[in-house]
Image (cartoon, one colour):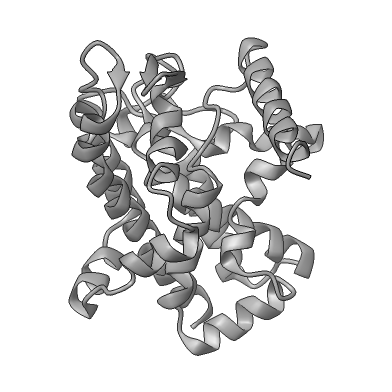
Length: 264
């Protein structure tokens, strides 16, 4: 068993690298599994009791943390290729979303707005409703990862090559998973450390619009790209881990707000 796990990890790395070298999609990755699980866990702590019961029914017992990674898990299924561009949006510096040329395949802002509208309509089949919730849970997380609101220059940091300690990496991966994973906390431990949020702050966070969420990610660009010679490690993590934690918390609280509004 001890030998099997490293082999599986090696295979996953090879598959991931091969996908990138073959071109992949515009943005490879999202918050890593741990990040999405944290967001789902935080959201569950802020759900109304009635809403939590309703979601348990719709998701057939699946928790929000487990549902949160579905959009990444189905990437290998060509049936879902049409969803690839939904994970991100390009908004160049100095522009607003309304001023940008829109992706004909959709983007993260358009998709969140559409899915929320569809869920509110109460016109979906049980299968469609379950799928839309999984999409919403994932994308509310993604839009809070700063590099999912990209400049259009480097595929959301995927083309910005860096070293994370002694390993080759890219800026997107550092923000998706490497800073989070290096805390060596489980997703429940990390979520618990974020859970004590005053009600006044929760209300303020939930009053922000999707466009506000995107603008917040844009406002972090200077900080995110302050990478010096690209050799990143303790100093970069120290300067940015608080921001990572903040964005995970904001995503979870806002996701709960949306779900409470839809099903409350």
